[in-house]
Length: 260
Ligand code: PGA
Image (cartoon, rainbow, N blue to C red; front, side):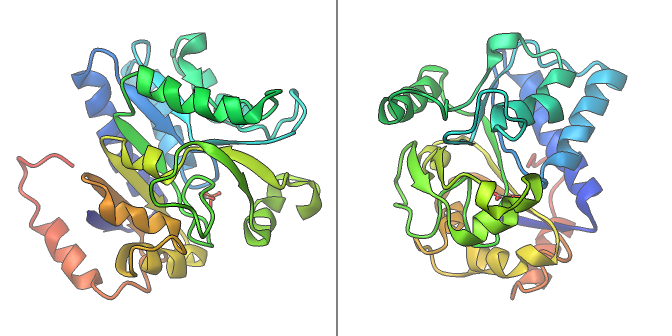
């Protein structure tokens, strides 16, 4: 696990975009893992900029989103399938069927969870997974208590997550209670995990995630088990870390030949 603290969200977006650009250029059929939420927005803005200004192509890539609300109408603007199109994939040259997410309107939701988990396996797994952290320590929508080896399944959102996400809805009551989410085991199978957190509101969850015990009560702490994880933080999100000086030394001494 490498923890990198940068001055702000723009620097994080550029560094994360470098990782994705390298995967896109190195692999004939890269598979990206996409997250929704506010945290990846600067990264997505940078990817769109590189696509437009520098010709960075996604035409050979596929992508899987982490999660989806259950029960929102097909045309609801907050369905994550719509959010990721608006915020990223509509602005790139991905093929129309290259982006998949769990279907929160499936008639058989349990079968849909199994189908989605298998679709990721069939695609060869995720090369680079982007993820944020919830203020309650969730990653994707794996709320506290999630099995550390869980697969894609139905979860019930905590009150805190629904309150955090109320900003996208008329009020917290409109935030669906249920979701389909990739599991912690699913995320652990990604080949590179880029965990991003910005802002002071995330500082307690970041400290538990990075320096607390590996525990289902802080699901994002599975980052400690991941064989190749990069944690990208701004200074506010990193404020409660105990070993911040050491992370800064590691970053300053990073050999130029060592890619992230
Ligand atoms: P945010 O959400 O990026 O909107 O803060 C992160 C998350 O809930 O995982």
